[in-house]
Length: 162
Image (cartoon, rainbow, N blue to C red):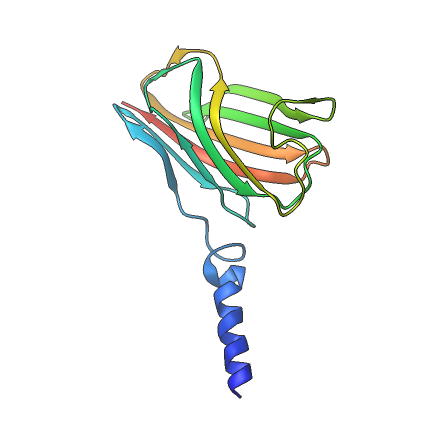
């Protein structure tokens, strides 16, 4: 009986539906940055796993090189990795953007080529246009996926600029 009780307790602790991971509830909302009138919140939209993300020096004036931190454990091998971004404001599409992050012939980051079960941890600059974020609330859908369209990470983000 002790073995059954121990097995039941272990199952309860690691079961995704019981711990909030994959079956029942949503992942918690995280703060990527919050400072000087700008707040960036995100929540994983991948039902199987959450991830970590932060932005250094949160500012309404987006610099051309923003330092970020991103960490996740891979469920798929990465031969090629792509990013899709959709920006919406008041229910209207503002921007749709796709970008190849890892291509077999042109790996841009050290984590390109990593295998299932390995960790991606990136801390460094991300090149972008230097812009000032207009006042308002924006919704962003970000998806990282492989060449097979398998999701690596997915996030619903909210940007609040006051």
